[in-house]
Amino acid sequence: MPDSLRRLAAAAVVVLSTLLGTPAAADPAVLAITGSGPSYADVSLSAPLMVA
Amino acid sequence: MGDGAYAGLAVWQLGGAKPTPYGGVLASRDMDAPTRPATLGVASAHSLVTPLPLGKARVTLAPGRYRFYLLAGGRAEIRLPLPPGATGRTIAATKTSRQRYSAQHKALGPAVTSAALRAPLTGGAGTKYYAFARVASGLTEDVRVTACLTGRAMPCAKGEYVTETSADGLTYWPQTSGVGVRGALLRRTTRVARAELDTATCAGCRLTLIVLAYDL
Image (tube, rainbow over all chains, first blue to last red; front, side, top):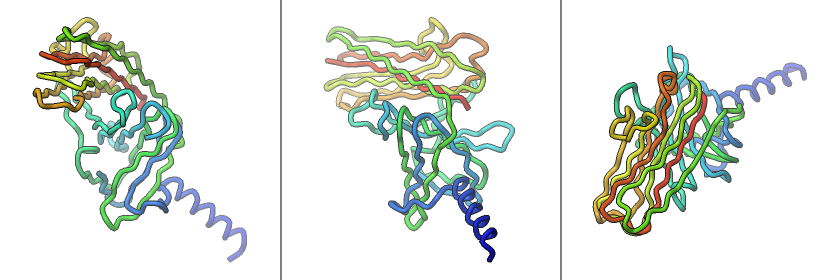
């Protein structure tokens, strides 16, 4: 794969991770919402998500 | 929790004609020490509070678009348990939201059997409000604490959005009430958040009213 395509693919992964959330390494059974001060995030779920 | 006075989460589903609330949770240093989460409910027009499931029990978010509001006065991380075997995820709330938070306290003398606190509400059509009333005491008896959103000089009993909790003489935990309302109704008249306490005996009681508002 050419370098330009590889960089584009990496950028796409970063964007998708930002939109959908990144895997939490510390606790695999937690949905963590983080931030600093009043803020929000828009999230698209492609599958059902069960939370407590 | 985080390093601010409060921390919590409110979830709304997007994509329909109107955003649909999924409730949320809120912990505040002004309510409890140590802090513990209180469930956020949302009132429908002209009806009492209907607690929504998030924070009460397991709830399944259907596929779709959601907005996660981080309710926080500083850095915060809200952790929602996932079912065993699920893959953990982290969502970073990076878009700035406008929020207002206020807390009032009133210490009651030994002979006082009722008290009230009030806070005027200001906001726009998209503003959402949560009002919490809590009484903290080492010894309480026959305590009723009420939170409501009501008219300028009206008691909670005549308010449109009222919730209350009652405790018998054996209850030593602080009691709390919470209520939320759609801000569009504020265009009709001036409203206030109000906390009321009625008790037979409440030695060293302290009544607290907390109001949190954010723009959807």
